[in-house]
Structure formats: structure tokens, C-alpha cells
Image (tube, rainbow, N blue to C red; front, side, top):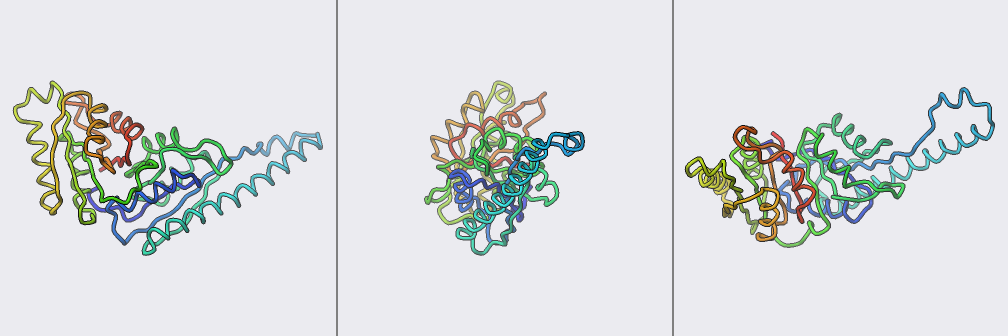
Length: 291
């Protein structure tokens, strides 16, 4: 997606990581004309209604009614949580158009179902958190959303929402997805002082094509420089999952952008499983961009 996302779905569970994900959006280059929807999800278990129709035990019927009551209370709590998240987001972005959504579902499915109906350009999540019921939420959930969403997904860490100017690392490999990611980043609205670095990780296949890595880096630099952005390039050699993490640390990146898929496996398989690994392991916010 080369355009700036104008509709953003933000998962909120009350955790410090979810709040950090909101703070991190200050440095995502998103601009002002944004429609944001804050979603909170819970998945209480309710016995199937068929069980009640065959039940003769009054105690079972009482337990069923109590469970339904708990579900109603949980729904109220989840709605309150979404309102809390929206209020927190409005303090950060008072100019945004912010609404709320709730879902009584498994966390990942609830987020994906709302995304399917609302069609955001970006889903934002913390790397880990908890449900409204106090159970584990993100982590495996963020991974599922990342692999099943049809839009960009941004996963933030507690350290992501810092006050310094953004330092953006872009992992490229010459693929169409990487090119789309570069153009999307270049079109965003960045604050003065933002710095960008393009990293190309070499492997023996790329080394067989004369100057191919250098050409990739130069083309990427050109796309960003045309928009007046301050950009440098780095060529690294090794496993992309390891070398890109090292470059995040060297550059002290606040965000890492990657394409969702790389070159065809016959040529070179870069992103895909690699992008998922980076989203899980990078010590900064990671945005996976889809065309």
C-alpha cells in the first residue's frame, strides 16, 4: 500500500504495551486525517444453549444463568475498556476521528473479524498484553493477526513510544513488496529530524548477480531522497533474521519496516517467515507492509 493509511484499527487491552503502541504512533508518519477505531476483545466461555434444553438439573440451569450474567458483565467491562483506550488515544491525537468497537470472541479472531468488515489500512497492536478477564492476550495473538490480516500490521514494544525524532530502518530485497513498502514510507508525513536507513542483507545468490545488492540499496535511497528524507544505506551479509536485528540495534531504530513477502523462492526468499520473525524479535516497533 503506497498511500498513507487513513483508517487504523488499534487493539487495546489496558496493558502498558497497548498504551505504548498508541504512543508509538506519534512516530509512524501518519498525519492528521485519520479515522481510528479502538477495539477491545474478550472471550468468555458460555455453555451451548442445546445443553440447557436437555438439562433437567436445576443447578445446571442456575449455573448457566450465572454464566450468562458473567458474560453480560464482561461485555460491559470490555466496552468500558475500549472507551478508556479511545480517551487515551484522543489525548495523543486530538485531531483524529476516533471510535470504539468490542468483540466477544477469541482475541485474534475478534480483531480480524472487525478488520474484515471495517477494512482498515493498518492494524496496530502491542507485542503482548492481557484480556479484559486478566488472561494472556497478545504474543501468539499478534502473530496470528500478522499472518492473517490483509492490511499493514504494526506491532509495538514498550520502548517504542519515545520522545526522540524517529529513526526508521527499512529492510529491502528488490521485491515488489519491498518497493511498495519504500513508496508507502516515502509518502508519509514525517517530522523534521527523522532519519532513515535502508538495509540490504546479502546471501550467496545475490552475490552471483553483479552489483545487484548495491543497485537495490541505491534505488531505495533514491525513492526516499526524492521526498527530501535523510537516508543512508547499509549492506550486510548473513541470515536476514539475525542481521536486520543487529542493524536495528546499530542504528538505534525506533521503527522497522518490512514487506510481507520477498522475491520468489527460486531467486531469493527473504521476507514472509522472516518478516514474522522480525516482528516477534525486533526490539522496536515493526510494521509489516502489504501491497
